[in-house]
Length: 448
Ligand code: NDP
Image 1: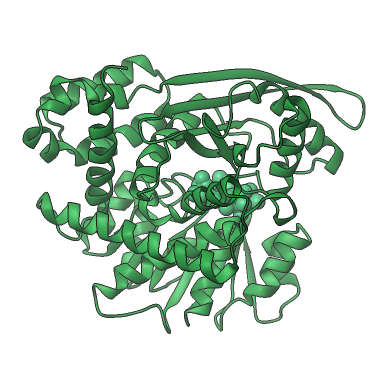
Image 2: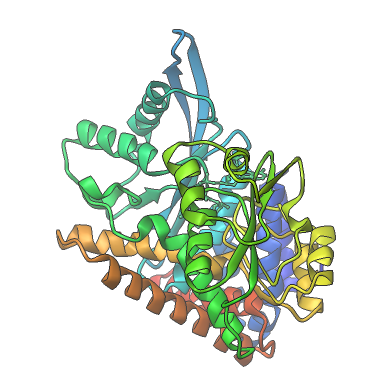
């Protein structure tokens, strides 16, 4: 870890003391504070008016019990969270994650990342995040529905189009959003489409929302590559994960002429030297709800490596799209050794701090998640716009808006990095640009 300015170190010490044991949150805060060293000296008002300290403390944290009955009649209890982090720029906005690893520290780290990511999009949305330790894997349709309904029975008290707008994340896709929206509508007797995003097309969803995070990550990667006067065409790409973000990152990379040679899940990875058939992969994963091993089982030219690390596969472009801290320094060194030229985080904080440093020290283009995966939330904001105007845009128009937004995100990161003396450092650029935007709004709103 690099040293912090004394005023920033004192903010960090307070964060450690107030949030014991929440290591992912500590990691996310430290990364942002490191980038703010040059900002703190240029803008003492952010320290004097406690903006940096305030930004690290969520505005509201909600923790609640979710009781539900499984198919055998047994009563189950899960815990759910909603951390409403910052609403200086707009209503809290950010997804819900259903995964056994979810606890307050994970939700806080995601909410903290989200507030900066949302600012980077240039759209009027604040930051929040939520989730539950519920594991949807192996649960029946009925169990998933009952869980979502029970969760929304409580969550509905806290959210709203102008208050807090949840969406999907790991374990929460269109199906779960549908059940949650149905319960919200029933309880409140309001057809408030803009209360959730990631909805299905049949009831107020937006075209391109499903594809948006993965597509946006690839657009961002293209912009990074442009700075080296090259493109994705002909490049070997490895994607980790095989969920929503990974599948559509793979599809857009393939569309732009790249060869996507590998992807993974938490059990192992599949590698196919002549390029994965992305349509088939989407069919297996999204339609049939099977695993990457099932994809490999259907192809003679694909190999499945049980328990393997996907970052062993050599590539030109790496897109980590699974989960936090999935790519460590050893994997980063192996990627650098195999000649990787660009890494863009489709997931939130998938690279450990040591891995990020390894890429940066080797001069590799590195796009942090809060910039590279901002296309998902940006398209959620486009979904809210369509809901507010009772409109539904075409795929082409929505994708064009997404592409423009990702261009803007890239430009904001690049110019802030330049202005603060770290040209080409997208981590610093993303943190500085988004921090200043939120901080200035907070200063204008007074001590609240
Ligand atoms: P999904 O649930 O659709 O997919 C998650 C994928 O990651 C699955 O293939 C899963 O494999 C794999 N995975 C999860 N945990 C682990 C683990 N511990 N080790 C290895 N693989 C793992 O989630 P999303 O695609 O929506 O989200 C992926 C990442 O992108 C997350 O970090 C999320 O926060 C981030 N993100 C998502 C956005 C969105 O719009 N969906 C927006 C911005 C960021 P398995 O099935 O085996 O669990």
